[in-house]
Image 1: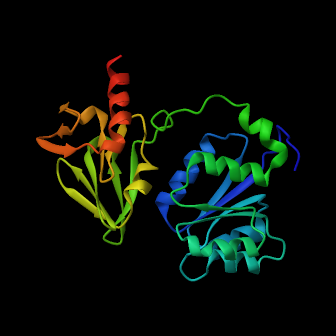
Image 2 (image 1 turned 30 degrees about the horizontal axis):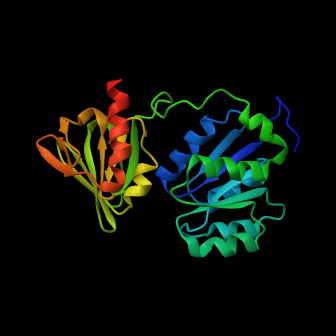
Length: 246
């Protein structure tokens, strides 16, 4: 497909997790050369959508209820280019056996997303890089995230977060009013939030910069709570704080 300012590559997101769709949607907003023509929360809806809509690139989750993404791809007579997205490494081989363009492991970084798009659209490389500098997540209007808590997708307002704590296979998100517990990794949460407004201070803690009341080289104080700073994260933390003071 050759670059054409009047015809944008048409893309479809298929994923049963709203949070995963939110991440990809924000990435599309950074690449206006692409046309996000739709989103589906399951493979069956995607199959119906593809019967009456042309799509150039399919961003397809693999593990979904009722019908797997790989099964959807196999059911299509003339499938579009497929970029698989999943949190499970063990599905990678299945994706490549089906001649997928790429395989993105969640949490998906923007640089990996961009690399996958390059693979799908090699003629668009110069166009993809020729736009305006990437805006911050906040400028794009992202002020909240959705997390699966107690079998529901719960909206968490970023400004209300006091700190985020890892607890083995779970993450605790503390606000002034309550604590939210979700089955997720702290790294996947880190990939969703604005790096200019939050800073990782420890393998188990992420804090909002504007909520830091005081700090030393060992501790951060937030809302009468002292949190440790890991040695590995200290230099980045200090640089972040210095940039706020300059």
